[in-house]
Image (cartoon, rainbow, N blue to C red; front, side, top):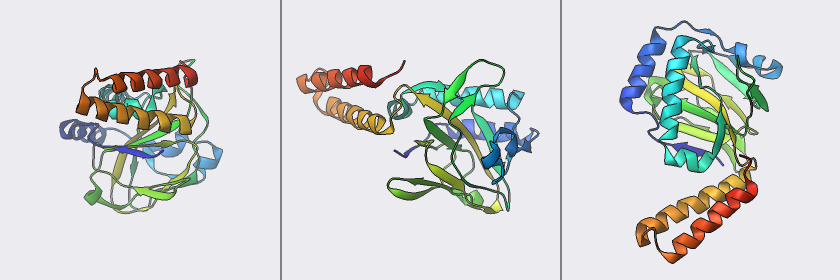
Length: 227
């Protein structure tokens, strides 16, 4: 499932992110790439563990915790500390698959990358090119969202970032391990949860059918989840 989630960050938060990273030092983006990815990666990145990356990453994580749509779709167990990258004119990231396991630097924590996330920090009209292109079972999808919006997609997908031909594309990117490993199961749970929320809004949360569906949802979570 590929899902776009609007307004995860407010415009004020986006402005703060841009102001902060505008003053920061950048490094070659290949520092966090595997051997295959490094051969096709050409961008810049805030150093992992830098004060700017930590401050802004904490802001992003706090915003995610306040997004019911993100939680419903991802069912997150562990989230890799958000990273930040920048693509200038001529820079791109060729077709690749994200590594299956990511180790959080300086900790014993390892994360299985079930889902990948790109949170856009540049407005679409500020740059040409730079579309995130994801290949999945439904074909190839191109994503270029407003600043503050994010896209969530399976880390198993082949994907690439098209060359930027004008301006600068800035974003946060990271991975997460879901409590539900299987993408098909997560999709079913997401559809069920959204249906429950819609019915609850129409009929009231105490409606008998809504209560039964909520029980089914939680029992499926118990069946599938690794918590």
